[in-house]
Amino acid sequence: MENKRNDYLDLLKFFLIVLIIITHSNLALSHREGNFLFPFIIDMSVPCFLVISGYVNSISFSKTSNQNSWFYERKSLVRKTCRIIIPFVPLTFIVIFCWVFLDRISLLNLLFNIVFQRWGQGGYYPIIMLQFIVLFPLLARITEKPLGCVALLLLNLLSEIFFSFLSEMTYGSIFTCFHRICILRYLSFIVAGILLYRNRQSVSLKSTMLTGLFGLVLVYCVNYITVFDHIFKLWQTTSLPVVLWACFPVMTMLLLERKQENNNNLIFKCCTSLGKASYHIFLIQMIWYFLSAKEGLFQEPPLLFSIAACLLIGFLFYQMDLLVQKTIIGKLNHV
Image 1 (spheres, rainbow, N blue to C red):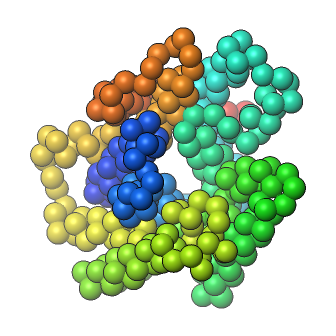
Image 2 (image 1 turned 60 degrees about the vertical axis):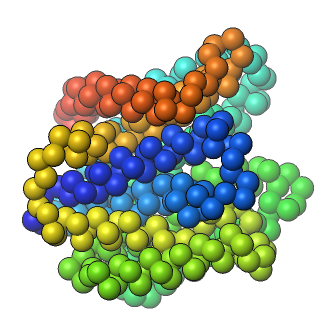
Image 3 (image 1 turned 180 degrees about the vertical axis):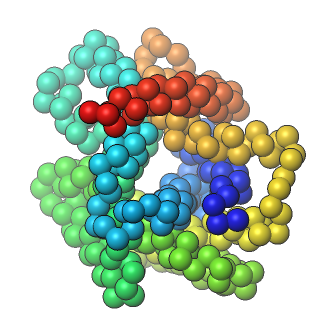
């Protein structure tokens, strides 16, 4: 069981990536205001992904010689960064082409857009994941002590306060853009994933329900009680207080994995396969919504069509990328 891939986490990733496609659609954007589905369900997708990333990377980290190091060995770092960069680069070139030849933006705006990933929906995510890969061994070592966990949570909180303050100043939009691509705002979710892995045997129905209950209360507070507005001004629905609610579905999947080790259901297998391709599907939905917003290209189709198209194209993109990465990483490891 320790070395077996948790199919239920892949199943959760499938549902999360569908939520991401939904939340970035025009239909969702027009129905966001006052809709309880967003803060309690739809906006939880990226925070849940970060919790899962902390959990899954803890598994692989514990199996390697890196676990006593503060940084990854060269081969591990190359392999993990290539998984993020290789599929991201060609899509970035498509976006740059559109900016230069369709939008005809200035060089300064082009550089600003590239640095702050101001394209698509969720353009910050690949940059967050690159920071995650570089910093993960450091975070794993720091969280070995309770004081280290507290320090990281405080750093997360202070960064929220700091960037909220800076966003109100002159040129505050620059600080807002920087906060968007900075991993500091997701530290608590990564720490939660690491701690869940280390205490996975202690996850019970009672602890899961209590986590969900307290998480639900905190999500309500940060979204509907105005006192929190002074601390968590930027991206409230994915800020530090919602970490327990983001842990709830992950803990639920850990419990399900214990109850049912094998599931040969065809639908289950299809969903978990798509879950494994979630990063590539994420990239495809970014370019899908970016291009659909351009005049003269294509209008955004009905939501169900967008979901089906992003899932299918993303999965095919994932399969192609596996072949490309096998070749590239093999060559880089021999350099």
